[in-house]
Amino acid sequence: MQRQATPLAPVRYTVRVIDAASHHFEVELTIDRPAARQRVSLPVWIPGSYLIREFQRHLQNPRASQGRTARPIEQIDKATWELACEPRRPLVLRYAVYAFDNSVRMAWLDARRGFFNGTSLLLRVHGQEDGAHALTVPPPAAHPGWQLATAMPPVRVDRRGFGTYQAGDYDELVDHPVELGAFWSGRFTAGCVPHRFVVAGAPATFDGPRLLRDARKICETVIRFWHGAKPPPMQSYVFMLNAVDDGYGGLEHRASTALICGRRDLPRPGASASAAAVGEGYVTLLGLISHEYFHAWNVKRLKPAEFARYDYTRENHTRLLWFFEGFTSYYDDLLLRRAGLIDDAAYLNLLTKTMNQVLQAPGRRAQSVAQASFDAWVRYYRPDENTPNSTISYYAKGALVALCFDLTLRQEGRATLDDAMRALWRRCQGGAMREDDFAAVLTELGGRGFEREIAAWVHGTGELPLKALLQAHGIEMRPEPSQPAQALGLRVSEGVGGIVIKTVLTGSPAAQAGMAAGDEWLGVEAAPPRRGRAAASEGWRLTRVDDLPLYAGKARAVTALVARDRRLLRLPLALPRQAATWRLLPREGASSDSAWPSQ
Image 1 (cartoon, rainbow, N blue to C red):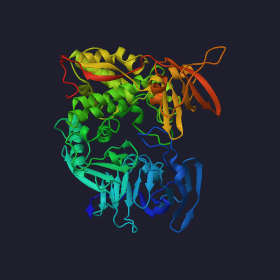
Image 2 (tube, one colour):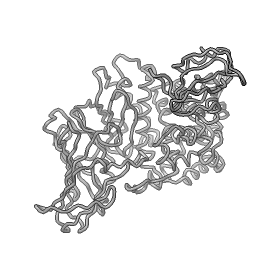
Image 3 (tube, one colour):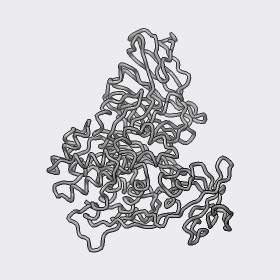
Image 4 (tube, one colour):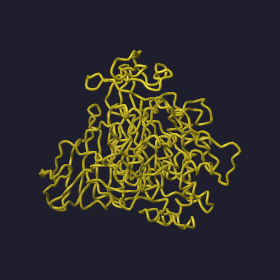
């Protein structure tokens, strides 16, 4: 058993696996000194994922007692309960939580694996949030091969990780997710800090040592970025990766991260030493690891002032997600390059994807990244067919804003964005930050005010000066022909049933033709109808948009045959002469005074 001399917390939770087949955890909450009218509540959102998720809908059969005396429970709003009890006499609540969300945000339990975030299971005890909280997870008798992994400090745990853990307050308690199961586990040290990597659902071909080596390079690179040779701010760190058939995502925590990826994206034995050569999926996974680890500094410690104290009952708005998510998105791939896991060409390909994602979204002209940050609760996490037209990703455009600041600072020769990030850490003491802090650091390091750039790039909707800044650093933005769907301004799904239009981009040829989300694109006629009389034309069944040039030939316009609400429509569709995506390439003969992106 591991032991730690820690006094017993006055708020204690015990989480048991009671019925994995029906996906239920049982939670027992003991409050040593309750109030006469004690209130408890479950968060309605989880920090890092900006959407009201109503976790309380999975809480079932709450009951309470003091000794042998049952106490009544009154629900007073959607996520809050009040209990009338005898003050200062231990109060025990018991309830079940249904856990069948296989994401990084909630809770999951079946016969093979368990996982939970505290925001989904652990009621908040009003008035006692700032005191110590303990969590006990007993070993499930029905699953003798299971282990437990969490970054929460242990009090008394067995070799498999089951036992009691303790957090300094409620915020810390729910910022330590818990992984259960017969998972693969490996360890490494980075920056004098022990790191653990656990992987659930990995196939037999999984190359664990390769993942550990590459993850260690990432962690060492991030630690050097922030602290040089000094130790990082965490005592330990845990990566929890859930490998599934098809999935991708991550959620940051102060000393751990929950990740999900496709099994095909995991490294396999005998693969090349180059991460890029292993496959695009593996590079994407490494970028996710880099992103979430960078968040241990940028949003979990250095954070928006609005997040200094979370309000778990409602939305917590900030206009700074362009910085905390966007700048993290800039550095995630950049630090892969600096770690030597990808080369310049692979890095430029990744940056190209981000750039095209932004430049192909009409919403960049409709919404600033600052406003997109504020609207995350109602827009980013609730996408619909009009999302690309009405909003912009604070991840993607935020990354390009970071690029512009970095290249501008480097071009002027006084500092880099790296310097600005570290200066912000020192200025804010790794804590609450405001936009004014960022502006002040830029002025201090850059030797001039950056109000114009902040106004234009962060709060404006004009185009970013990407081409000029990249050229100054020896990188050319070269136009290339796009795929037919992109050229037409369409996002579609294609399958056995044919083509279904998901999104029509504002101002595109498809929009001008009158196409709409939900239309089934059935076919094309190679010549448009003539006014006043039927035109001789040849019709073709269309099952893939990429086949359009085959049937259109040299025609500059076709008639699109679509079905809308079972009505057949014939829409005149002009084919664009030149629709471009962009590709970033080193400019031949170019020289640069900057070592970007390798340093």
